[in-house]
Length: 451
Ligand code: SF4
Image (cartoon, rainbow, N blue to C red):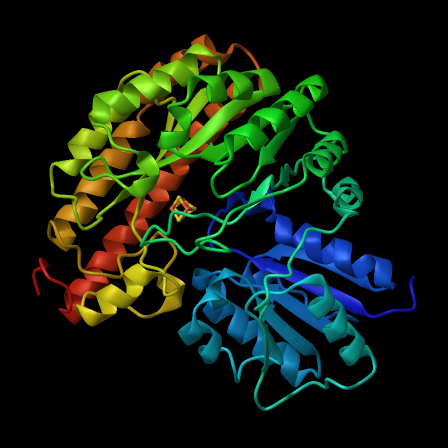
């Protein structure tokens, strides 16, 4: 065992979560920064009740999303009482209010971090200059934007479990600034070096990988060159990009040539258009997706119900859109106004936030008053829609479309398997949302519910 410190690195999740299959790349980054220093990283992707307190670790670092923040604080409290140093970081701390809330709950809050800052923290902990139980947490933030991916990132890929997918970023940031989202490096966009990305993809043993950009391919020439470089590796690639990007035939040809098989697209709402969509009515969007299918690539359409512009007819429009050609698989949630977004600030000002318990910001509870319909209409419409797109008949029809588009390839079979997972997801969310409505009704604090 190396002589350095032992660090338990947790990524927490609630419910059944695919994060165990696809751990966020920042966990790989932390491992790649840490192990060359002689420290040991124990990576644990876990629910709160499976945290191992019987550990020799001197440092416990927890990656926190909003819905796991209360659990992270409870875990941090217990570890600190045991004399361990606790570092909290992750997307939940992108906003001032959420970073401030953690100040007395841990020893270090990492709002963003670069390699030098991480190494500096570990050096100070090792030498005793940071000790457990600080009254007020030290805040780390990468103000100068010095974050870069480690050159040795590909080395940690070999440590993945056989059933885990590797995610490789080809860019960082997102220029679109959607009100309901707070991506890392919002408003910016950087491409990674093509040879570096190629080398990382080359080291992934699995035939399937994800290029996990917030929005893949915004720089067309970079994307085309990358696809040409990746093509000989014959990987089956998953990407997430925008409708506006998919309107370009040359770009689509390059994706198909490079091995892209599965494209996730954030459509969000059919009742209004976002900057990332580019203009166009529903049938125009469908024609874009049919062009994607024509090249053997599958489309996953992601929707958010209950946005400001959505009225009760929005559920039927989503169902009709998903039933037809073009969208091979649909993933649908009710909106969560995360506290790190501009939307949350607006909803607080408008008195629309009805639940500030972060445990409930988990896509299984209603935490705000919708604008274009009542809460009851939103939950009823969502449950009916999710039931409809997870019915056996619907899924069989989609499975035929998927196999016709992509053939009996791993990507197609994975999409069918994921569709089957949504049957269980739909039933679980139905139970949770019904309970959530009942609780809000009892409290009488949401428009459109009987008291
Ligand atoms: S385009 Fe996607 S990643 Fe970018 S801000 Fe909008 S929702 Fe977030």
